[in-house]
Figure (cartoon, rainbow, N blue to C red):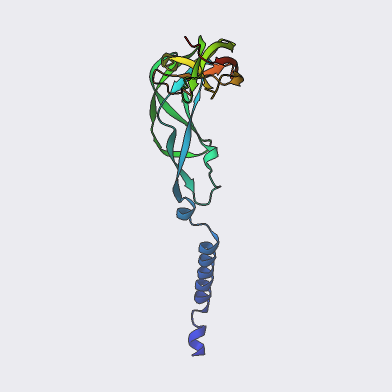
Length: 222
């Protein structure tokens, strides 16, 4: 038995060394297939605009883009703050456009993007002056009538896009009706309303407060 073990001893030792070397190589060397493996990460990235003039506003229905990014399994983690979905509006005036979505993501591989483009409209921001009207709220009482009104300032300046300004029917303040003849003096907030009396929050109204004075008196008897 001992003589058999001694036979080809050099060959057996060489085989053992090769086996150990192969084991060490496979154990310590990264698997290139595993190292190159990637997975897809999905991000919902808010849409941003750039290049828009100060007196313009862009209108579009989409609020975000779905971006798929290829991320190495052994790479650094990726967060949504590393990506930006941008609509470049440089040099565009009022009108309707189909604008491509540009994804800014340094050193990241973008696999897919949806939507790839966005249809939007650009409008001018305009201003106009409008009288401030009074709206009396509460129960109408036969025991009082309005004898005098005073609003300071009497006009408000509106600022909004062209289409929003076209919806404005009036600027008003809400004055509560008293139970009996008396004077009213308060600072009230004027709001822009449409033809149906609905407040238009997209309209900027200046000033944000006006002084309203109303004198309520008893009706004169004939």
